[in-house]
Amino acid sequence: MTDRLRVEWPDRQLFARREGRPLRILAISDEPDAALESEATRRELEPIDLIIGCGDLRADYLAFVADAFASVPMVYVRGNHDLGEAWRVVEREHLPTPLPDGRVHVEDGLALLGFSGSPEYNDPKEKVQVSAAGMWLRSLRGWLASVGRRGPMLVVSHAPPRGLNDAADLAHRGFGAFRWLIDRLRPPLWLHGHTALVRRGLDHRSLRHGPTLLYNCTGATLVELVPPGS
Image 1 (cartoon, rainbow, N blue to C red):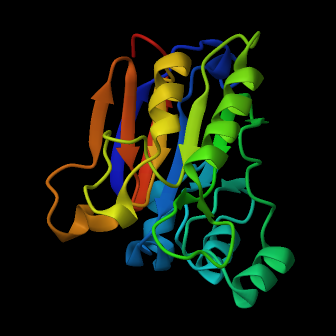
Image 2 (image 1 turned 45 degrees about the vertical axis):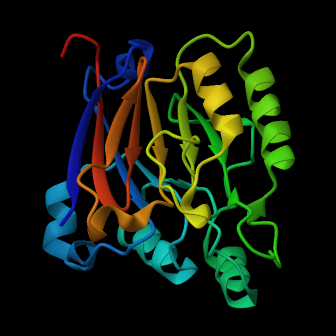
């Protein structure tokens, strides 16, 4: 089942080119949504303006979603399970490159700041697990990239900030660096995955921290960004 989320976006310029129409985002992560396999269901979700992946989805599933909404741009970050040669082959041949860590990417007028990876919790063989120091450097780069920019940004990460919408176990904790970053960027919306336990007993997928709504988009969620005052 595809969830729904409606968020007021404080930048009116985003909607000027759209004649006031909401920006509709399909956000996916961690667990495939079987509903998207239905062509009828996909038609009900349209129009989709942007697909955002928050990690830990098989590359061939990402490619399937990209093909199913053929004319819709896709951006994504990689999760801690997005590794191995098979994943890299599909990524190379069928997917765009992931969002660059700590750098601003603009898609259809929407400013995005992305971060791949999770905190280290075992002996990582690839860089999809990131040390605390490594994510501090990426977060600082993201902060510097935001300096002087006008308008809000949507943050996309695999792991959430530490203590905000994360889990207590070592494998599903968030990043302390993100906790510092969120208090400085104060984005209206932060999309993440990683704590996929939402569908296994947790009773929430969203949390508000100051002006920021943190949203765990495990599965699939239709996110509508709407003009302020809507």
